[in-house]
Image (cartoon, rainbow, N blue to C red):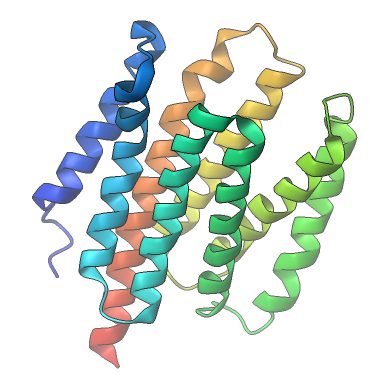
Length: 214
């Protein structure tokens, strides 16, 4: 699989995801805007599933599909319901990444790191509604990020996971210390979508490369 060749479905995902950033200024609503929001990561999920050569390849497609579902549920049913879909994706991604550890101790390092980040989030954002639920979600988010950084699926996956983490952290800041500032709102979507695209591209190519080398 040629890493330099961007296939039409992946290109369509990039166009859909990048163009949705314009909705910050357009402020479109309704079903069309919800479909628009979910299209970018949804198309990444279809692309990844089509490139799958084994169970792990199908798993990264499912992770992306849960992300697209979260995007849609955020608009339809609010933050808590959307977070459930994202949390499921984080846990599935963590399982996948730790199946491909870069170091033997990865399974022992990622959970305590995630727990420490969750406690920190509970401390920093303790004045927000339901800080305990936020801490639980941050545990899943941090576990996914740490697992990606400790996996051998490559720097693109690790960078994408970090951008996803930054995007969600910006959401928390928008709800608390930076409420009213335009900076989080301007950066949430690009960091999120670029992160998902890097995860998709990096994981698909890494998994196909491992399959070819087996």
